[in-house]
Length: 429
RNA sequence: GGAGAGUUGCCAGAGCGGUUGAAUGGGACGGUCUCGAAAACCGUUGUCCUCUUACGGGGACCCAGGGUUCGAAUCCCUGACUCUCCGCCA
Image (cartoon, rainbow, N blue to C red; front, side, top):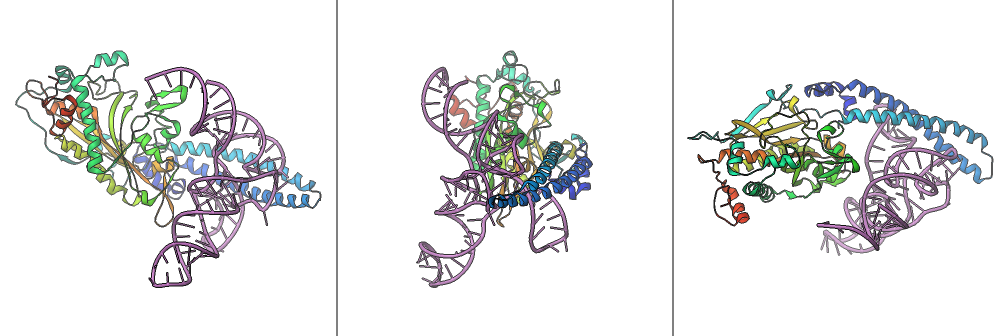
């Protein structure tokens, strides 16, 4: 959520910022409501001040056994007037809040301005595209060939987009998840959190999914709960409504969860195999940090995610999202795109974002700084990583001419432990 | 799902419908004392909104939302959450 006072004092800056994000929020509407609210509030406060004073007089008069009839009558009038004012103020505040909750974050200065992903900026790449002396297969063929998933039965029991991992495929995914979590804990010092997959409306609002994106999420009507689209939601909101000590910062958390996305309206788009799913698994990093250093931390977290891809020996590139491709709450985002040689495309496996104080204002996550002042923290998160597309990249990168898939070096210890075997191929012999 | 108890400031914990933003204790911070520390003593210890160039005012907030009243932390209603007991159950 943007700061109302900031909008009031920097209206033009906000107009320009929102325009960069292709947003149609009307700043003038917000300012008009704000102006009106303050006017009514002023009258209300003055009435209230008089009421407080006279109420004390009445108490005094009654104590002395006097008659306060005329004062009581006057106060009745003011009381009624204030009830009306309170209603008006409350209506305005509700409207104002709705407008503010629907206004996206403003892109950071360093973000390239552009209407969509074609304006994203290449930042760097690591490794280079692998070449084969045979025609590489794509994920779908490799999955079938090695019997790693049963997509048809997934569709039968739930619907398309709900994958069923089988045998070696299930173990490979589980090895991948364990590897990633362990790596972030040991190498980067994150604290693992196990969190609920269902959260309430307030929590979904805190990180910015609600009210705008309600249709993108699965909802349990009976209890008014939402299935989380990412661990970012429960993990970031863990500290909602709290005032932390600056000594507690930074808070570094990593969490592995199922993620649920309705992906409404995206049918037919990249939906083959594991590319776009309604349910998938993801390891997510979340940090709550001091506002002064959040952009340094953004670089650091991007690196944290990159190291996973490096460890897995996968070629990838880092893209900086343009203003128009930025998500609702983000001020700046790096996407990590892994090369899938069989599919012949770069696939997004991680999105690392700095939300500045946008989420902190909504979720009300604050800290007491060294100077004693209470301030909003900055929140960041990044996938580290989403498994399905990482899975695709591994299959396609480590394939051999006979369709078998070698294990990346770092997964071997996990594989050995899980299968009790020392075959370095993704297969159960 | 049924029955009951509770929700007050950083924490614990008082609080007759009328100087209660809130007793008291603890903690934290500052000061006196000390070579330093402990102890003791003194002081400080909120968030948000708003008016004002400023000094400084005013208002709201005792789980949330309604209601009663001239006036509500205190009375009434609804909801959320926590705890205890019963039932059901991985």
